[in-house]
Every structure is written in structure tokens, then in C-alpha cells.
Image 1 (tube, rainbow, N blue to C red):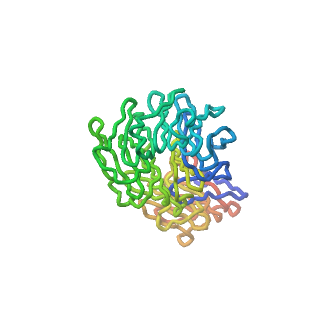
Image 2 (tube, rainbow, N blue to C red):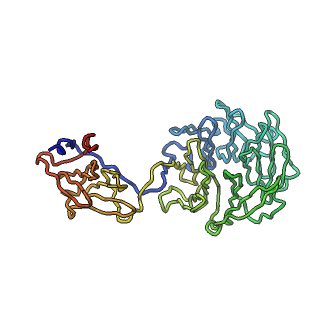
Image 3 (tube, rainbow, N blue to C red):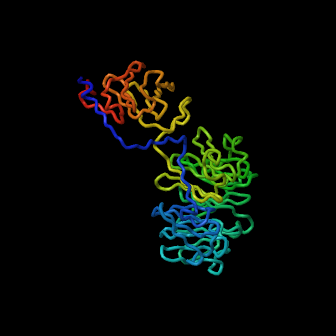
Length: 430
């Protein structure tokens, strides 16, 4: 028959491996000490202008990561201290690392140069390093800030910062340096220092800061939720709470990150990561497969991967995937899917190993098994012909489905084991 002649089926006598569909929403990979990371607590993450990731660890020094291998720098290599809490890059591409003792380590790609109190820094324990405008590097300590410009080191507004406790510095999209203290919020635009908190009261502990694509500044707190700073005229800002603060007020927020799609990622002390897409809050932690519940640091690289530094579980990589995972279809719990066919009618057909064929259309799922006329429930191949019929190849022969009815197609007894079906142009065209 013409139809039989134009059906090509290929018989493979060796076993093939079935693709496993794991029910998951996010794609994470854990990079632990066993894979070369020098220490399991990652305090800070920074991507440099060359695409390398730099990781500051709690005792394992400074790690350079190219996506495959780690290069570890410790005190024996010239690093000031093995507990690294802040990383930045200057205009010349040098990497600056702040340790909990010994001052600041500056790496030029070959060797380290150390800056400490003897060189003019305000202290030997930096808590934050930030690149400013005009090739200035800001180094913050609990009780003071130093500015490094080439070989010149100077104190920055000692009258202001000697009497407060500095928490963090942050460079915004315009290059302004934000300085968070226990009582106030300051902005330095390269020329003048402005206290923007004069117009509002800060009665919460600020732990983190980030900027969205609209220019708003978001503040993370310790068990008080999120607050937003929105710029008005001139240097005036208004402060208001995040609209869903009742859902995040229990979180001890450790860090904030806006990705390229303006999604907000919230790293917490004991609840893992929370993702906010301006519609929903999604909790990602050990309860749904994430390696850690305590996230200390976050960074998005130039390709869109997001890296999480954990408290004891190493480095975690999230890589956005262009695929949608169908893991919540009621009645479909199959993990062994051998073939998928999208029909002209918009239906999706799935062939399984042992449970027949499923048809999903308009959120409705229908199953076809031996009770509906299939020769076997071990299905290997699916294909659609020009008339919209779905052809089904199994270990027992060939079926096709037309108008939701199952028909058998007679084949020689020596060719019952169907692995693949393909129609040539003559059949497809009619």
C-alpha cells in the first residue's frame, strides 16, 4: 500500500536511554569544597571586567573562578587576611579585597600590594570597599572612611563618620556612593556629601541595599521587611515600606539583588532565597531543593547567571533556562517520556514507557492505554500525518489515533518493534 511504503520506521535492537523529566522550576547547581572552592562560607561575590568571579571566604582566602576551576589566594600568597568580606575593582582592573585583619589587598594580576593603617588607612579592618567617581576607591571601616586616589590616601569626612557606626557602602547606577550607618543614609556624588535621611526617621536596622531599573533604592532590614527610597526633586527622597511587607517582615534579610529582568532576589539568614517578580514572592530553600537556607552574598554575571554565596554550603549557581517545566499537570506524574509530538490542533502528545500515551489540550489531560486499543503501553515513537492522525510506535506494533479513536495498523510479524516514525514529503503534503 502507498501509505505503508511512505512510513519509515527504524528498528534498533540495542537498548536506548530514556530522557528523565525532573519536576523542577529552577535550575541550580551546587559548587562545594569538593569541586575546588577553598571554604564553604562565601562572604562576598564579585565579577570583574574580564568575566572572572572573585569569592571572599570565611577562612579560605580569596578565590578566582573561571567557571571551571578555582585559583586560591591566601596569606602565604600575599593576601592580607584569609577572611575576606568585601571585593571591588578599580579603574585599572586591579582587584581590591578587604579582610578582617591586615587591611586591604590589591591584586594586579601577578602579586598583591597591601594597604593598612601604617599607609594611612583609618583602620586595618575594612567592612566595605566601593569604587567612586574620578577613579577614587572608598574603603569603609566601622568608624571612618578612607579615600584612595593613586598613591594618595586621605580621610573622608571624619567629622561625620567618626561618631557613627558604618554598615555598608553601595555604588548606584550613576556612580554615586551610598553610605549606610546605624542612624543615617548619605550620598556622595563625587563633589558633596548629602544626608538624605533628614526628611525621615530610620527606626530599623538596615542590612542591605540595591537599586532597581527605575532608579529606586531598596533597603533590606533585620525582621522589619523592605523599604523603598524614591527620589523626588533635587536631593530629596521619600521613604516608604514595600507593599507586601507583611509577607517578608519575619525575614532577616542579608542581601538584595536586582537582575537584568528587574526581578528582586532576597537573600535571607534562615529562609533561603526569595524571588520577587513584581507579582509574586517565591520562596526557594531546602524545602524545595535549594542547597542552603542561609545566603550571605549574591551576584549576577554578564550572561545572566546568578551566584549565591551560602553560609556553609559553598557556592550555588542559578542559570535561567529557556524551557518551561510542566510539573504541575494534574494526573501526569510520568518521569520516563520517550517521545513528544505537538499536533496541528494545538495538542501535546507524550509517549511514555509503560503507561501509554497522554494528550494534553486546553489544560485537559487524556490517557490512552491498552483499554483504549493500544497494542502496548511501552511507547517509543509519535508522529502526525497530513490528515492530523497521530501515529504511535510501540514494542508490539503500530497504532494511530483519529478523532480520539485508536486504530491498529497491520505490519509484518517481523517488524513489530517500532522505535522511530517519520513521514516523507509526499505523505505530509497529502
